[in-house]
Image (cartoon, rainbow, N blue to C red; front, side, top):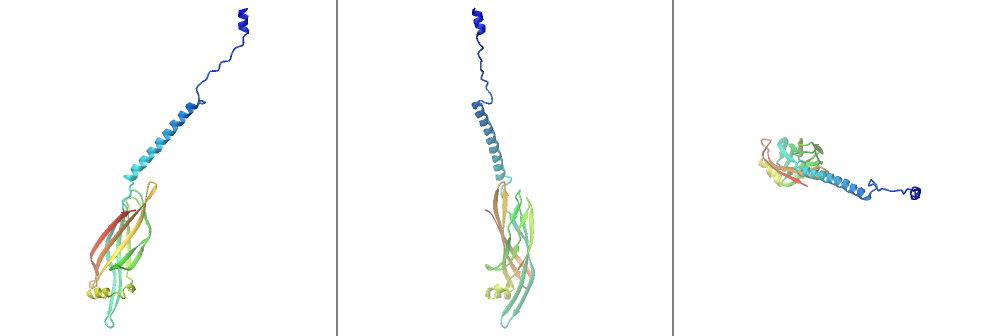
Length: 215
C-alpha cells in the first residue's frame, strides 16, 4: 500500500538558476570593463597627440630673410630758384619666408613699408599665401616713394643735397599654424636700414634686424 501511495504522488518541478546574461551583477561588470577599455584608449590617444604637439608638431616661428635691397629707379631734379626737389625713388626687395614647421602655414595679407626717419613714405601690399611643411616662399616686392609726403620735410632736402638718403624698410607677416586641433598664430618682421647714394645711384650700408614671435 505504501508503494502505491508513493507512486500516486505528483512529481515536483525543480527550478535551477543558471547564471547568464540576465544576471544584473554580470551586466554591470561587463559595462565597467568596456567603459574602462574605451577610457584607456581615449587617454592613450590624447597622450600621443599631446606628445606630438610638444615635439614633432610643436609650432615654430617662421623665419623671414631679406636677401637683397636694390635701387630700381632714382630720379632727382633740383631747381635752385626757388629751391625745389623732385624725387622719384623705388626699391626692389627680395624676401624669403621659411616655414620650419612640420605642417603648412597660412599667412595673412600684409604690406611692406618704406620709412624715412620714422615716417611712412611708401608701401606695397604683400598678398596672402600658403607655405608647405619645411618649405619656403620667395617674394619680390617693389617699394615706391610717395613724394607728396616729403614736400615739407627740410631734412630730406639736406640729405638729397648732401648726396645720401637714409631710409628703412619694414615688413611684417602674420601667419597661422594648425597644430593637431589648435591654431597657433605666429608673426615675423624685418627692419632694414639702407643708405641711398644719389651720386652713384646705388644702395649701400644695408643693416637688417629680424624679430619672430609666437602668439
